[in-house]
Structure formats: structure tokens, C-alpha cells
Length: 170
Image (cartoon, rainbow, N blue to C red):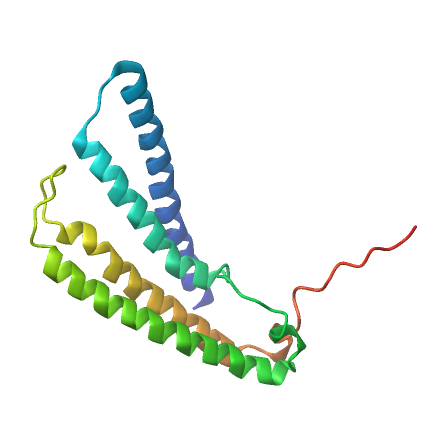
């Protein structure tokens, strides 16, 4: 099961990395074409904005999976590992509640505003706004996976990770 999860995470990361790479190439191309040749395409500019939004929201779940979200460990590291497990689970529950609210309201927004046609690519805005609830659902799955891992993890997984550096004189 861990091997399948690892493969899925690599694919998930790969999609995000490919989107970010494409965004970088397209932004560089757009800037060069605009400033060197005075050429600009509204479709490409709108696609770049959509791709930027995609990479931002796509990274939500990846940050959860890899523990890259913002955390302040000053108090957390001084709690006993047996209690840390349940604090971590509580944190994941709070994250899930917030994410579910995000999914709900972004879905409502996509449904309300998605009927409009975009000016650049001339597609329904739902495809652009739909990125938010889709990525929110993926993030919710990642949060659930991490909460289950926290429940099943050995106590050693909750030992302090951010030990302060101490200057040693030589």
C-alpha cells in the first residue's frame, strides 16, 4: 500500500512540477515576445493566469503530504509524544474543516461565476474557477491520509524534529 501511495505522490508532484515548468517557460516567452517584438496574445496571458492559479491550489495537498505547511513548533515540541499524536490529529481535523469550507464556497463561486465566457480563451469561466474546488477535494484527501498516518504512527514519529543549534567552541 505504501508503494502505491508513493507512486501516486510522485505523479501528483510531477503534475505540479510540469505545470510550474510550463508556467515559467510561458511567462518568459510572453515577456520576450512583448518587450522585444511588441507581440501579445490575450489567450496566452489568460492561460498563464489560469496556470498560476492551478499551481497555487494544486500545491495545497502536496504541502500537507510533505509537511511543508506553516507550523510553529515552539510549544508543540515541548509536549510529550503520546499527547502530540492527538494534537496532530486535532490539527488535521481543523485543517479538514477549513478545507471543506473552502471547497463549499469555491464550488458555489464556480457555479455562480462559471457561466461567464472568458475574454481571452473564450471558454466558460467554470473551467478556471473549478480549479479551486477540485484542488480542495484533493487536499482533503491528503489531510485524511495524514490524519490516518498520525493515528497509526509509532510514538517515535512525534519526537522533536527542530532541535535548536548550539554553538560549540572548538
